[in-house]
Image 1: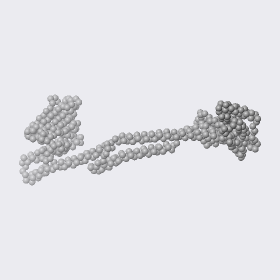
Image 2: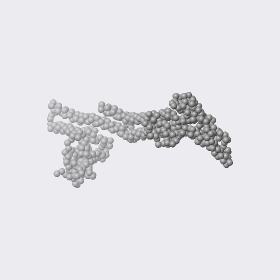
Image 3: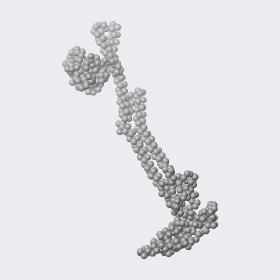
Image 4: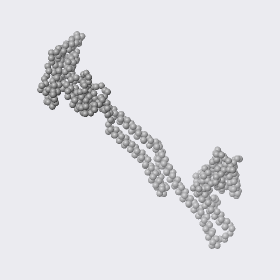
Length: 567
């Protein structure tokens, strides 16, 4: 996998993990907080309604309920608004007002009902007459007790409340709380006895329950099985006007701020995601910086002259490809350095022996040891020309490789150029006993090229071919058009070049004959110059050879889009 894909996969993994963790945390936290909020709201509702109901049961009146409402609002954090249910709603207490704030609008939910009336509990299996008597007594006791408790509350006296065996509250005076104002004192409060008219009402309602119970018994049911619920309803109806009226309680306000998600879990996940991102970045940077550090150290060593430095390469990503490119560059530099050293050695080798010969003959002539006859002077002149040619070839090669060799390009007929080369080298070929032929197309083949430089390149190939061919052999020049290219071949029937030496054919001073004798001729730079000239004409050159059969050099040159001779 490439480095770019690995980096993208790591980033995507971090993004997906961060998104998934954030979504999971938000959903989990919102769900938990919603459940906690609902549970807290239920707890607040139960507490508010329970304590208000206990207040009504305890005091027999709603007088003085405002402090209790304020305390409940402060404890629960809820806005509490308490109103009556009889007639037009009258506000008994509003926590906003009690706390000195502007009353807010209540929420749209249905109000909660708080009914402080107790529920009568009658023993199972009780006879109807006994149940009636208990109910009548509990009604009278509750009515009297609530009136007494309300009087004690208004007098500022603490009320002690209990319950009898039937679940009906019992009241007693406790210590004075300090309130009261114009209300009667606790000592002036008396229990109120039930009037005869009230007993008549109880009796009528109870008789109805008794007749219903008798009807159930006649239908096959047990006597008294249906009287308990009936008497409980009678109790509730008969104590309604004595008990505190039911209340409507509204909690909350429309402009209450929504509950915010807790910050701690979000911060925890954010820190975890950040830590994962930092870890991923460290791993990524480690993956990147390790080979970069190796490349830096190797390039520093390369700059200091250590051309053998290489970097270890593993994998197939961009970083590994960079390492391979560096190694190839280092190998190329090392090879160039080796070629430069070899060039210096080759030049010294090429010039040392001829210069030593020239020096020796000149010293002999100066000392009069040798007579300056024409044959000796011709030999020395030929040696000087050879050295001059080596120097000229070196200069041409240096200029060509530096891109400074001057070219005068024009439309050049390649067929005519081959015929000119054949004519120029015909004397050399005849002297060597080699047949030199040229085969060109019938029509002209024009290339945009420097005719002199191309003749120099082809001439080098022809000279080498003639020298490599034994008497009786042949050298052939051919030209053919291949699409938008021109193909020039120089083939000989010489001794050939071994396959292992073919990669070195175009190197400086390379010769098939390593003896470098004058018999083999040439400076050893011709093929290098030829390759550079062809390259500068945007062409290519190659060689094929078989030992004992011959060698073929192939030049491929581009043809212009519209071939036409120059005016």
